[in-house]
Image (cartoon, rainbow, N blue to C red; front, side, top):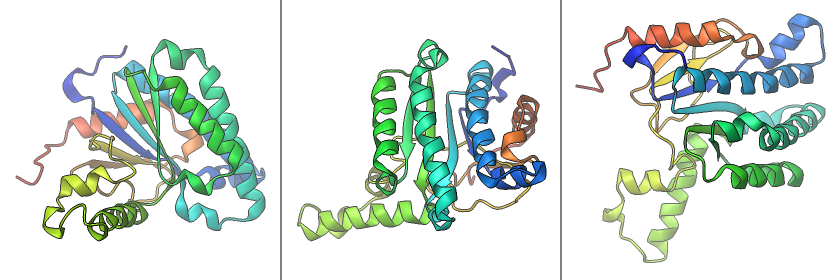
Length: 238
């Protein structure tokens, strides 16, 4: 395990951006960029384990991605299902006791992908060395709206009063209810925006923007982001 002292963020979130542009740069069809991006996931998990990161969240599929062409979506769902099956069979996942969590509305996915997700969640539910969250079918505003709707139903049914609504209650009904606050958010591809990534959990996160497309992201880029993070003074609003 690589030692970087006390500078390691406990929870790193990555907005995995740039798959399609990576494919275009190589002169390949769009969906090949997603194939390359999927292969990058296993590498990043290895690096996080080596560095001592306790939790990592990768945003791999946003709710807005459903607007993409039907053919591309079909390939994305195929790749996603393959990922879940390979994840279960990967010996390093079980050796390192990586626990999978999926954040988002998975009901939008085809049955095969939903089944793969359920199987992967079940296979790793008792692990705790590294928490691996995949944000899929996820949107920051959609997450908050969904939580408000669920709390609204409780009020409608007379189970709670409006005065009982607290930030803790609202958070408990979010997709990311069991996810720790994010310390460091990395966005690949050179874009400098948050796109609503884990809005509730990243209010005091530090941001790092990497020029490389997601499939080209390397360990040295992760280490650079952590070193940059370590040089910042976090005040948490104080």
